[in-house]
Length: 327
Ligand SMILES: [Zn+2]
Image 1: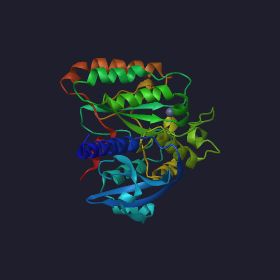
Image 2: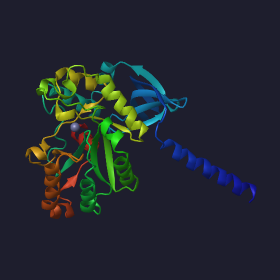
Image 3: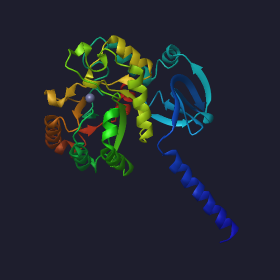
Image 4: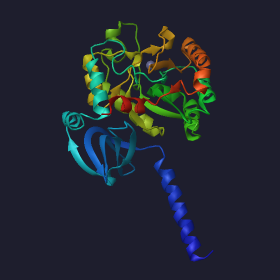
């Protein structure tokens, strides 16, 4: 091998190891903190909502205020300006990100289903959200398989949102790896939504249940779940789904102050709520909601012809809100 070939080879080895490294899970997260920075890099201006270190490298979790997309990137790649949260809201007040947050806050008085529950008015199709609350049962893989079967020639990869709880991730590594493999194969595209770490549920009334239960450590529920997501190679999105869809004004204010947008649902299928155009549909994929899964498979069947004619599509939560709130 001559010197040029050898240096080319070295370059490719470097390149591939670089990409593999950057996709690797974060196994050694330290100093995981909520703080807000404007992170500029050339033309792009992102909002850093978390900072942490991993193996002596410093990282940000960054939000694009227009597309609502998130990514993890090295702090050293950006020029940074530290900001208090109210300043973020003021500076980016015309962005889809802040408009989404404000829409969620405006509905914060509801005990159930606060946040954004309907994505794109007038659009032909729905946004699918699948909750993975703690469960002893296996993942309902049929949901994801059916989405792929119906949409693989129409939308590839088909977008959907999965709300993960920490306790589900810890017990279902095989199912989680299977979901990640579908994303790697570009069969589906998953927006990973924080669904709290413990997802406690008790027998008290809603006002004292789920995250409203006395003694709940909200900081732990939010940040430990994000850390576990990162450890598992999932990039946390800007979205949060309340366990049981239960919240009050004070907790919505706290969640939005973490930079997260609460996502409700106007079509929880197992409760008999019918989806309409632009609905955010909720089903549970954790093996505990047979009826919701059955209803969803049935819904796909009735829409089969519309799907083929592109008259009924699945919408990405991020793109839906960008479209709804862009000027
Ligand atoms: Zn749940």
